[in-house]
Length: 270
Figure (spheres, rainbow, N blue to C red):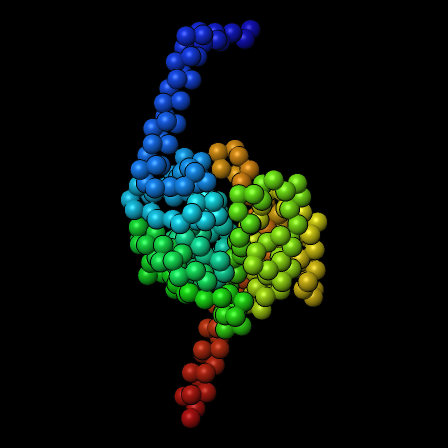
């Protein structure tokens, strides 16, 4: 027989509501003291979800508040990225780059905005990983042909908080170029691509991206949650899909080692 759990009394429910209201009032007051705009106050309430070390000196600009990947999700991205060299193509204030640096061999973090790169460097120092990240101020589209890495991570701007009002988020709404162009440029670096996209992105279009390669790339789609709330969709392409990336990097390292041995052998002959 199930034991009935008594409901809280009305006075207790009222006290709970008052307590929550007081917490929100204190939070808003502190947000005002930090000079935050009304646009980002709601994101400030989630600050520890964005950076667990927020109180240790994390800095963000206004756009960073609503565009940085929540830390729990960024950790997941890093775990799935295989431990090689990661190109973070739109690094912003460094949320993903920091977690990649903690889990992977090395990170190249690119952003066209010098202020964002400065903020990302500050945040990386707080996590003690600044020595594992090459920060570059530049245009990813111009730099892509010169880049080499095992994984390309794409989390381009979604268009600000208003993206949530769009019923079906299509890839042409991504900034600064549409999703198809972004993906094709990333493919010039590596077939192993990870994309972090809005939770209501058009999944049919996402799957179509895998057909831009010949033969088509493997694709895996994953829902990304924080505290049971769906925050976005992560898509893994190529070796990044279905946990294949570790084997890919081991094979690549094996080939590099054989090439080094071959060069040493022929060098010894002469």
